[in-house]
Length: 448
Ligand SMILES: *Cc1c(COP(=O)(O)O)cnc(C)c1O
Image (cartoon, rainbow, N blue to C red; front, top):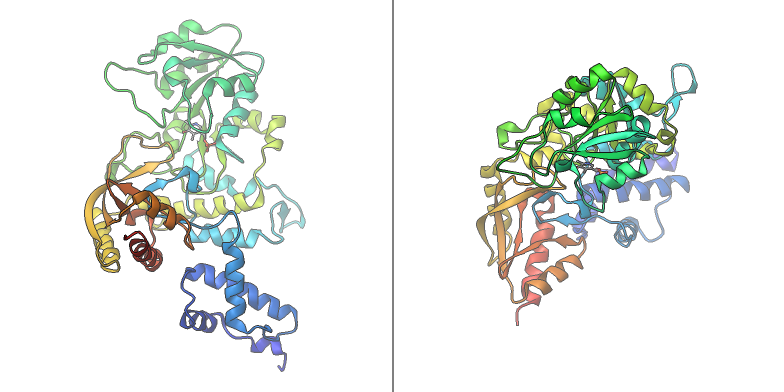
């Protein structure tokens, strides 16, 4: 009972003390993490309080984190899936799951039998339930998932692709290059704007190994256009045992039609049609960076037994975050609330307006105007997301942006004519004080 370790101060008391001492550049989550790590150290040395005292030690710990090269920033741009800022911010549950997995975990351990288990089991049932597929495999990047599937089905043969779908996604990810790397010969059919199912049929040869359909994630074609559907391709291929692979890009797990976001393929539909479907974990799904393959049992067995599958395995942090994110999708309402990507995309414009006004009230001299946010990340390329921006007048917008980037935490904002703009869609409420303080400081420093 006299163990000094049991007399360590509670986390909440230390949070209050730290705030009272003026530590306000950290969010509550960061502060709690720093406090936990300081308490852990204290426990390890038998429960004595740190030599510097609690608050200075906590402050030191926070500074260490802010000196790392890969660190938190505030995304004030309104670009929801900002690839350079790490695409999808993770749900709280996913962050907790990563924290757990960071130590020893059940990554490849079956607690029932006390023996080796499979890392692929953690998300498999969830993915089956959520997509309707027989089986699922997770690898560490969607581009690599496509490489794997194309190699598994198409190596040493021909793959038929529409000329309208030979796209570049970003970061020099080009469909013709991926096909070349996977050892399959590209057979182009149709034209840039129109490709019919008949074009695929005429291109079939004894060497045909697959049809590839690629979602045009980051641009749209309008006017005199047509394309073969996944259903048509699967039907054409099934008589000849030619599999259809669908690179669905983002891969929506639930429709966002009701908020006006249309045109991204639903994974469930492509699975139902019978295609082996590849999609990204950190785009609209809102999880960690990974690539997910789902499909029929026989096709998935071919994919999973390909030697590349092992080389592309995801690590424990990714699997932990993915399972937690998918768990939220079991209840669609909860997913929309707790998966940050979904809650930001479906945010009510009236709520954004109220939040913008609240932020503006903290920044004397600022004003609010109607504006647009962007989905980003190569999804819904033409979508318009109405928002309300908080704008501040500065003498040099360039200089103001640079000052914001150099702050702690760094803030990434954008310019709008000669003002700088903050979009509340991608800023969390708890970040408002930090944004306001930085905006005020920048207005003072750029004033002549
Ligand atoms: C984004 C995307 C990819 C690549 O996904 P990563 O997650 O960047 O690996 C592949 N195909 C399409 C159609 C995409 O939109």
